[in-house]
Length: 167
Image 1 (cartoon, rainbow, N blue to C red):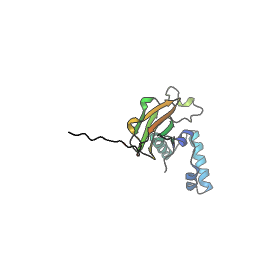
Image 2 (cartoon, helix red, strand yellow):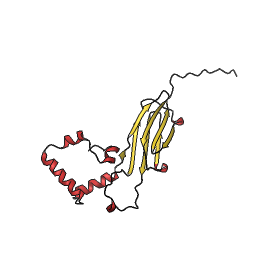
Image 3 (cartoon, rainbow, N blue to C red):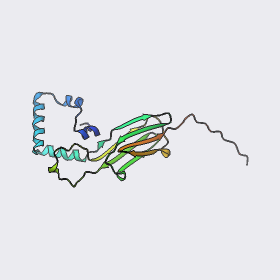
Image 4 (cartoon, helix red, strand yellow):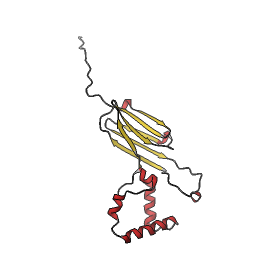
């Protein structure tokens, strides 16, 4: 089964292309509706309990915007509610990995929720960059829940002239 994206986990949506392949008949659709109704009223069979535990342990995929300017590659991601200590950014010349964890507010009991759609838990994303960057000069900024990572491109056309010293 394909890993659900961060947005799919965040909104509770499903990818219709993936679902069309798995749903071959109206009977399966009806069965899935019954299972969903059972989940909504708290009835779970053993297989569903195992699946829900696996979902809780899975990492979500962080959604990003990736674009370039003349001198930089920019990565943007929404990380609202993530404490900076719970965020890890690793950069090489051709990849960037962003990992983190959004802590859930445990002061509210589950039975007091009417709707709970926000994603809580661990997330990550590793991106292969379209150009080489200089990791030592990278900069990360958080502004109103938006993480902005600026990665300076390596200028392959840059030339330096060396003077030969005579000893």
